[in-house]
Length: 560
Ligand code: GLC
Ligand code: CA
Image 1 (tube, rainbow, N blue to C red):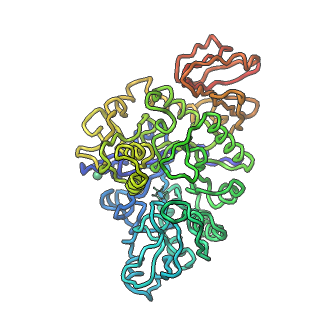
Image 2 (spheres, helix red, strand yellow):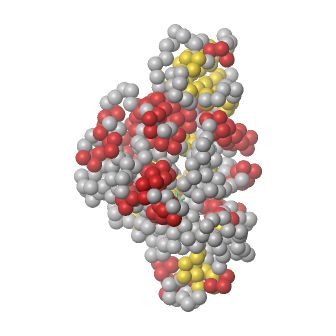
């Protein structure tokens, strides 16, 4: 396994609108990130992925870009961005931008030129078809992927996401060159790389077939005709060669739906990207083709199999994974995995550690290190997220009462991860001096950076210790480059694995249940040296593995 700086890093995702507001308008901004960089240094972060901050009408909070070269005024100026790049680099932090090139905003000048003049070169920068050539594909945010092209009688443009996010036509070579130019412009500024948005959608099935409907709306998922289609590799190979390949940068693809067998094409030394996110074990009660509001019962065992499978495949292919439990599109991890009465210090740190010590580069999402929970929004009109609004309507259409629909939406909404970062036990959680764009969670007085930083037993300080152990302790090499080997496979609610390197073994054991367990009888010939625990653990009971509910321990294992 080749050593790389980004394999040895701990990454942190910032959603700029919700991180820190420096100028009192209720919206987070780039100067806010500069002001809080030292917090991230103290935490031990080496890579920051920032969700989009370029000019945008904010229909999808910046994932609808209208100018790839200019910072949106709500986030600051290009001078602020240059200062941020410099301030981060002085602190040894690499910045990853969010590269959104499957689509742009309908306000981008390309789209404006395309609708203004049917003969413009920009007309072919978009996926445009005649009324009688349309397909029955459903966009990710609901409704058809086809919307009538403004000013045209019988032409429609395609959008995998919202209608304000027209897809770019990657079949057009000039468009591709424009994109490469923009990517190199930012890489030349010395950034560390990119998180690459929605990249599996670049290639559309050029036959544009209809598919059997999979929903009451008579439409079929756009994934069938646009996700990871044959031929996408040519675009991605060219993209890499024209840009990333020529820099010491890291790229992390958001690549849903890539079959396991194709992982090495997408990821690794010879792959299109350095790494791609694995979403296969994100949600324990994942829906599988059913409507989004269906919640399936799940067991720790089933879920753990998915984690082990993922780690096994990565190892077989020799590729590296960006491990994550949260991002700006997901509900908070504690709410996904535990019922409200089971969310506490132990369960929160256990699920955090379980993910953190897997083989790969850990990605922490802002507020996760504080134990931030789902939004406490009580009025459906307060939701901001375009997808949540659609989901709420879908739930009502499926005969949910308003309170049932609110409950369903609160469980899955992307706004759960977008509430303001909790900095202090002060009005608006110290995020802003003005009312924030999305309400602060009710629990900010207890869960915030200032309070937790002063409490030796806080979630924040647990995360700091985990990072310190992985980055700075004698176990660094094992925890970064060591092998992954599952253990205790015969037990139902134990998730445990060894990291192993050069004859040394470190084991993570998670008691994934609300009940104590006694483990010594399973591993009689081993001796344990405690490295980290989220609960009392007596070191003079070295052979006794008694774990409290949701206890996690990290131990060095030696044979007796
Ligand atoms: C990605 C982003 C998501 C966005 C979508 C469209 O999935 O993570 O937030 O809505 O792409 O750009
Ligand atoms: Ca602001």
